[in-house]
Amino acid sequence: MASDELASKLSRRLNIEDGVEQPVAVDAEPPHEDAQHDKSSTASADSELGAKLLRRGELNEGLGEQQQPSMKVFNPYTEFKEFSRKQIKDMEKMFKQYDAGKDGFIDLMELKLMMEKLGAPQTHLGLKNMIKEVDEDLDNKLNFREFLLIFRKAAAGELAEDSGLHVLARLSEIDVSTEGVKGAKSFFEAKVHAINESNKFEAEIRQEQEEKKKQAEEKKQRQAAFKELKSAFK
Image (cartoon, rainbow, N blue to C red; front, side, top):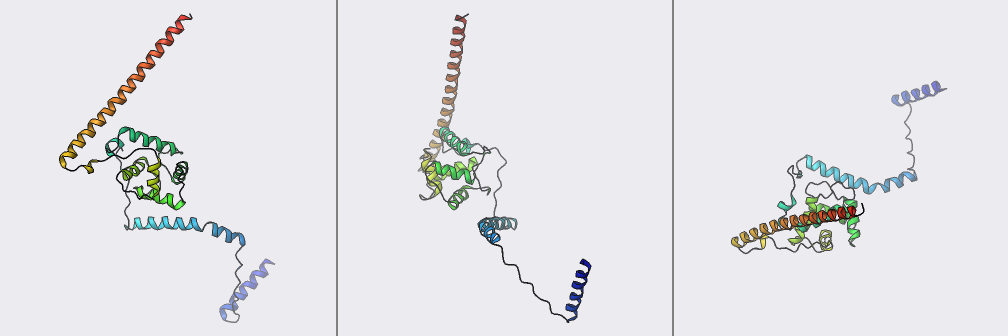
């Protein structure tokens, strides 16, 4: 029976090629309702993927610039000299607090959670714009250096008051209202400022060392007191 059907199809095709018979168009099956639903539900994802592919294509064709991450070791204390050690440590603590994945980055969902906990939830587009403003390596997430750039821009007054990054910096409870060397009126004042900053940096290190020394001494005293108390019960 299968051979008869095949012979019939071959005969029909020969007739069509000889002009004896006209081809008949087969009506397309109407789109299934589930297919329409799947199409609409993935439209936004396709649009976002298309934008990323277009961006990658432009970079490959040399139409855009992509900054590669530096291979040198990042030292926040030397690169962000406008901030004190305490300020940088506070920023690092905050960064690690919201780095839920503990991978050294704050991605879109982690930034979303951060802004919600700060009491200033953002739209999906708003969150993407926040990352884009300081995302130097174009990986769509924030590393610690890019996180510090937020506070540098805030301290320099480079953030719009209605921007998400300005809100983040304002609600972070980290005081970045310090005046950098750019605020000095002359080269001499700038040099004095730089010396003062260097002395301040060294003073902070000494203070940390003294605090650690004090804690070690207190621990030693507690251990000695415990041994003395323990020997009294023997």
